[in-house]
Image (tube, rainbow, N blue to C red; front, side, top):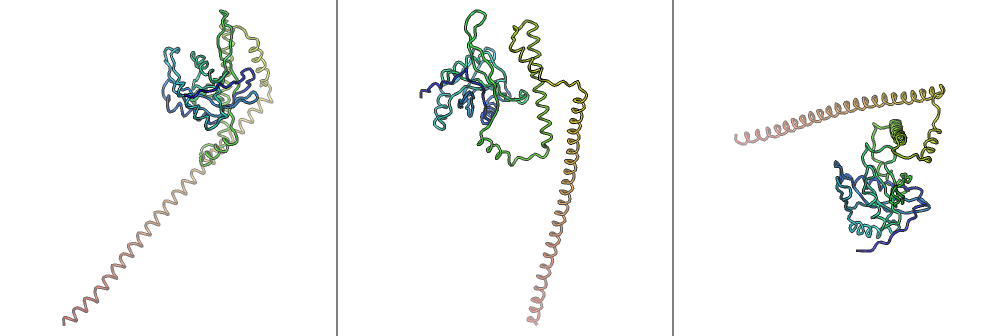
Length: 330
């Protein structure tokens, strides 16, 4: 078994994690093959490059993983398979290093910090990315990135805890070209630009509502003394709400109403046009079928006439021959 050199990645200067589309597709495929329809999750290794505070996760691969759903302290990661896979990947692209691991989540579990420490032998500061594969779990970006830090607990002992890292989804120029080629022949006339724009707005509002509810739950827990008061978090929340516009002005309310009516009017007009085009295509299809049936009937009649004529010609050819035979007999 080959020895894998530990990749030394700085943790304090890590500002952002960028997940590439190929990673998302690979994780979804991994989940659909292994754990779809079950309560299980899937785990794999992340490969990428670190450059000036930004970690680009450009590739990944699945690894065998098992855990006890009742006892979270019991889990297994096949590190031998993992090291063999990385050895093969390194032959293809030596620039891609082991930068961390992923889980289909959808949330952090108790044994994740132990699994995270297992990957520390391949990277001094690995990154843990939770990739949400279920559609009902995804509001906004389907990735959440974390790294581990040492904190002092109430007993005065050091313990490992996850801290959140900002993450985003981005693609290189080659990946964008590949996606464009894949989508070139996919046409869905039922989905227009306006409908997609409205769907994106609805999805964004759902994500905003989820975040606001999360902030509300946190503040309620602070009031109930479940969590200590964190002035930094409170100040960030205050800054967020200070950025919100004041919607009590009549002019803003009117502007929202006008904009909404414009969108609804365009949606209504597009629906009417789509219905008219559908009826028009249906009529054209019906006319084409009738014309095709007429052509078939015409061809059938011509075939029958031709067959009848050939039959008459054969009978005419037989009649003179019979007359000649009768004359010879006389």
